[in-house]
Length: 393
Image (cartoon, rainbow, N blue to C red; front, side):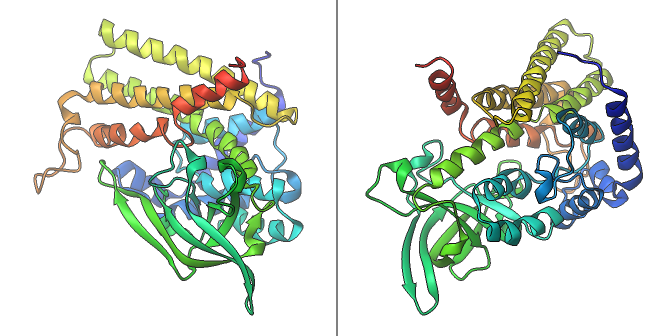
């Protein structure tokens, strides 16, 4: 593998750095520096800045609005955004449902949903997991019954979804629903796009251990969905689901973000005076080696995609190791800040901030990333996929 960047790639990297330095919104940076949570307007503001530049969807085909970047340029773009600690570009529309739409959708569906998703005018959420169907997603019970009346051909959807990230902001959601209860579990599922403002859709908050309202439960009660909102064939939504999850698992690895977090952890260790502690230094070195190995695996996955083969079973490996590394990073950060990790650094009652600023999110982040080894298909499920597809077991 040639690790030297071409002059064209170096020039592109410099362009990205200059763009971030000049165009990243100052008000968003101020919120991040103050440890204030970003809101919907913040995420969309940065999305639209990136969209105007043409870089918001680096993986999209050119014919649908993608920038036509090489795999190396996509990698460099992700690296620079991570190291500059910019706000995340949310993946639900751009990296999850959009590839399903432009791969399996009709021309009319592509025209209807891709441009507003690209522009940041349409916020998406994912309706996959249910209270009784998480890792065993094929056991989902949300039901869609097809009918026709004076209003046209439609489905009536009833059921409940859970852990629906940022659904409180969503304009649209992509949902897996059961359209044939008599078929084998994977064979009776369809992929529907549902307007979240439809009568019968109720979003209720779930407050997580870090005190945030990030996830929700979504109730669907007699929700009417036009049949033209179904992507791909009826009862073949599992094909879309597997395709989407393969892309999601690759994104979950977030190698660039972990490299940035490792850099922050090193700085914290220096400030706390434990960087030279033999035990801590050994943990940090082991983590860095694992992250470097994961980065090479990600590059191999990118090479596979550039050859037109799409994400393969290595996306499961990326998901497993990427999320384990994220969790280890949060654990070592909590260890590094020591007693300052016990209280929430936003303050106890009216006591004001406790400890240094860099300790403020150590405990909440530790709690929050416990989920990463579960969503997108639990790591236990990913090991089963690797055993089947790679080892032939």
